[in-house]
Amino acid sequence: MIKHLLSKLLLQKKAQADKLSALLDGLPQSEQRKVLFSILKIFAEDHLNRLANCESPADRAVVSAVACAIELVVGPAAGSRRDHLVDWLTSPSGAGLGDGIGIRRAALAVISKERDRLGDVLERTMDEFGDQIYIKHSPILQQEGRTSGVF
Image (cartoon, rainbow, N blue to C red; front, side, top):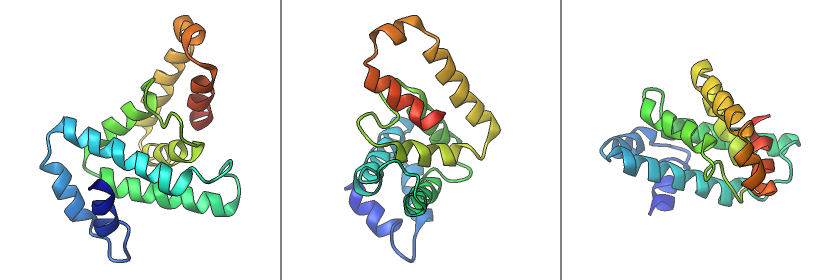
């Protein structure tokens, strides 16, 4: 259902992001969070996971387009959805585990426009990487995945 909403309201020439935003505004915060995380997963699977390391100009264009779409979803005045995006980037179970680096780059591009939120992402990430329990008990692939999108 979310994929259908994205294709009809956001990914067409005549995007109707205001309708998607209004729809999300009507949901409780927990549901907005679930929808946002689902949207990030859809973008990763459908558009970004096929990219190698996102270094070529064509790859950067795709990441940029996804970042613009995420920006439309979270909206300029939707502080709580931006907070959910920060939580997704910094949670041990979030940040596109199992997905390529592209989705993390796109999400960071959205957050990078706000110094406070970008600072939160960097601070939380550094706190986690300094945690000896995290270092000893998190799988190395999880640690590498988290660092590739932030640094």
